[in-house]
Length: 364
Image (cartoon, rainbow, N blue to C red):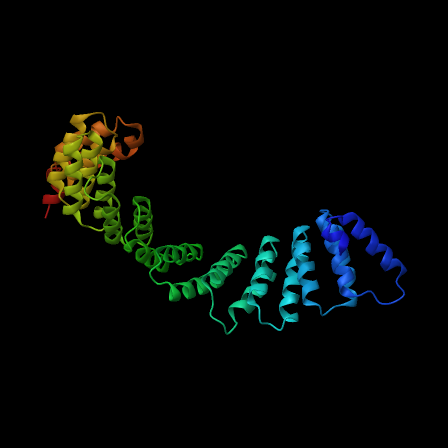
């Protein structure tokens, strides 16, 4: 003790080691503790740890000794062993100090011993004491590392029971359900998260894409509108128009497109308008939009082929034939256009007259 007070740690260690070699009686626990401290103060942590390990054989029920051994084992980087020692300490102390279990679970997690960590967290969360939020969050992390999404969902729901107003936990639930390919349930959770008011445009777009995948275009359109508000770019208006068209809300689709065209008229936008009008069965309007597409700037052959079919539906067969002839010049539509022209020529060909009567026909 005198050498320790004088911070002569090497001399203290030397004296104690000599004593232990020469002692003819059982060595008391304080001797081990003082020797371990002397080596620890010299930054000889591994040596100090070995002294505690030796002492534990004689004093297996010493809580103080086991705690120090657990701490030094952690500091020397043997995480799995340290996790085990903190778990042992919990039971040695009579299963009262839950912080020991939490330390054990955390250390197992650091060691990537996820199954052991999950087992300890399960014991911790199954205790009769009030469950802490951080315990649940850490358990979810363990479940995710094990790719146990059912477990992660279970504990995320527990988290939401404690904190139903936390957007980040609803978002977490949505991510977990996406991982489970439970897309409808994921959309429901994400909807709740975003409705809490702090969502950015990217999150609303993600929800819109999810609704499109679920074939719920009206929900997708609503999410898209929330993403962009009223200040939509031409590209965003075009995307919204396509979503409305998918839900057969043609008037809203055309309204979005007309706003885009007003902002930046182009053959591409007129072509899109022609597509929507054709899909709505409004063939005359579709032809007008497609004509504007053709006139505005060079466009794909689709404008010609679609205009041809619109004219055909209106029984304007000669006009349809002209459109198809122009479409035939576009390599991607050559075969389709030529076949349409052939059919139209058959339809436009004059019907054959009555056959001339022969003597055989008039013999009777």
